[in-house]
Length: 169
Image (cartoon, rainbow, N blue to C red; front, side):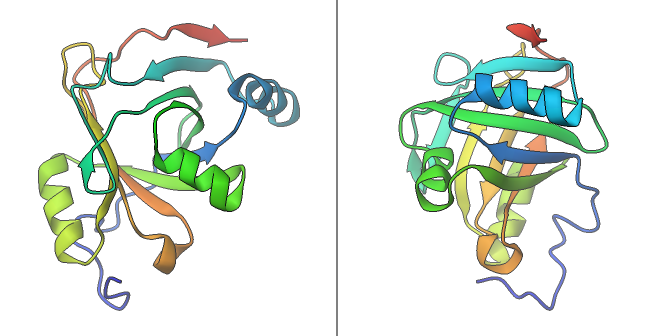
């Protein structure tokens, strides 16, 4: 467990840019969030080995896929539906069911953030690199649940955005 009395320099007051919610059925969740919360349009993507050049899961190599939908900003909402392979999303659904999973911050260097978070006692649960159209961009989820009740994700943004597979609605 990290030292909850000291700030972690890697987070250092960074604003939350994303709230991630794990769902078992992405299409059902899209309809519900659109109808009940009137949020959208949603930009939908599938992330997996075909797109991510480097994936890790719980300290080793990973091979997982997920469908995500993104809407809004300040913070952005992300719905995540696991598709294939062991992942922290599947783990969350098994242990807790659907619901709030993570809050995310953007960082300049994912490698430096990983090193700082590990030095503070927060290991990487899962990571991936290469979600941008030029193979850049990366993310890492940290084991902060004991201290915060949620996972913290660090996102190193890609220089350019990939076109979504679909827009909902």
